[in-house]
Length: 218
Image (cartoon, rainbow, N blue to C red; front, side):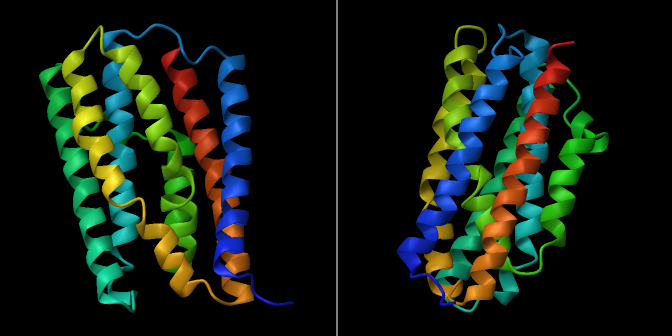
């Protein structure tokens, strides 16, 4: 069995990712995840964002010394810095809204902990990039645009944070994961492990999202 060429490999990863997105979207509709927002729900969403941004930075940072090429290493470092910047911005907004910034960080949902424990256990940065940056982080702009539309009438400052900072920064590093996977996921075994990591990571992400959404419906 031969390794796939880069374009075919990325297409296969994307197909798995989009299948999970379709499944997640259908499931969200089934339990009413898009109910009207309240300030308490907005705070809870920001707390969830703190965990996601900070954990993405932490699990990625440990691989920076192992990246062979300086341009990818540099961009991965910028990615980590951006994620931590986002966590700090969200924490500050939670404080302004009189919430507890680290409530979900200190007491994470079981499914949220499982997601990031899995990513911390991965054995290569290719697997991590496939699962996080090429996998479920691709859902972030889609869910954020929906959140912005819903939160803007209630809390325009939070909407602006997501639209003008978080989404703008995400656009700056969308190229990173596909380019790194083109360079480094070249053999059959690495590609197999990346496909498995993306599938598992997206499944765990979907469970974490459902658990979080259901927690806001109580």
